[in-house]
Image (cartoon, rainbow, N blue to C red; front, side):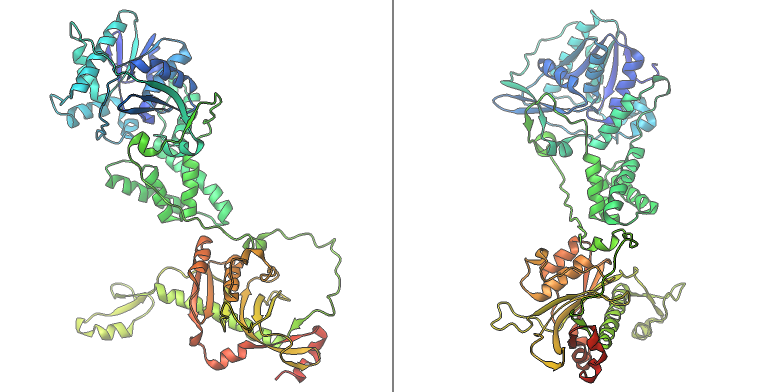
Length: 605
């Protein structure tokens, strides 16, 4: 028996193959280098031999051969991970003859024969795989169609002809045909069959977008195969390990994801993806997940952004060049393989404004400090303290509400969890069981807070809240604030001191980051002032949760904006707070300069 599995019938050395599979292509490559044949024969239509050889010479660039007739159009993808094209490619590199020996038949049905997972070839070897296929999966005698009988007779006849001219022929034949071809090799005569007539045969390639979708072995696997092929050493060779390649893919996708999201994926997260995808694959009678299952697992275990990075890295194929300017075809997966599975990404896009906080601090040693503008307006510090305390209260309440949302009550078994739930225990008293409280997942951290006291109708005949401002916090204990209120000219209570009423405000933490939200063109799509504040809260929040206290829940447009950034708006009805607290919060004063703070308490009550 040859070191690499071939069926030796000198001068024929036959390799049973499965089309478009990396493991089988690698077996053909190893057998070719060890056998050192003087001729190669593959199971491809003989009438298209010139086109196949041309396409094989372009590898590792991708090609597709189209052959049309009055009744059908055939497409032959040419990829590096197909065993037949690997054999043709290797023969051309060694400058030895290569032949296509199959019969082109009109109307040959598209069949998908169930086979064991091809990854097992890397574990048990091609010999055991083929013997299991012949011994367990195929009937004896096999059921053959008339089309298959003609093809197998034609292949046997061509092999007999080649055996008179060459001493060592490497033959690649599909597993479904090997047994019958070996039987027909013993025939003394062969009938002659006319091949199908093709009106036009064209060598093309895919568009750059379609290459990501239609490759049988997706780009990461094909690229890894090329790397293995280029560094191949016959005396210490091993087949590429698909399982390790999938793990490496997840590790590679982790880098751009962490850079874009400013978060870190733990090794346990990747292990969970791999475990989940593996179980999904075994449900579908496979040993390892396909790309669809891997992306689905990444979406479920991490998020859509990481799944997109996995897809992007997995389908990238840098050897696609098309330097000879072949026609580019926009062929769909259905046209090539007859079916597809669609997957959608809902990407979270962090706001550029939120990233302002992450900028590197500049060297302040060369900065000249100027006194503040003496004519600048400012707030009244005692009122600032009330608003800041209310903002902290909203953040704590938001955290508490999230904990309550995830909490559940379960029967007592071995632990009291977070304490006895007296209400549920009394309710189920006839069952003679104790019920305890159990916390859910940890609550998300709260970033910005938005409070809307009055929603202005659009269009409004009279603008109730014409004053719109953005204030920056004066120190680390204060937040930035954007608000809309009544006019400063409505109620003057002292020299340079006016009393206003909030329509709504937004608090942003930490301070000194807020641009003027009212003149920001990013919010030009919003007509209502409360929507502008909510949109700004989503953009500037450095945490995943925004607490919103108002009269009505946020609009669907605002929720969608928050969802795109991976954030959530937690709504708290304003009616949960007493009228006294709301009235105290709504009234505030604006001072004409900081020097007015010395006399403000004489006019503010």
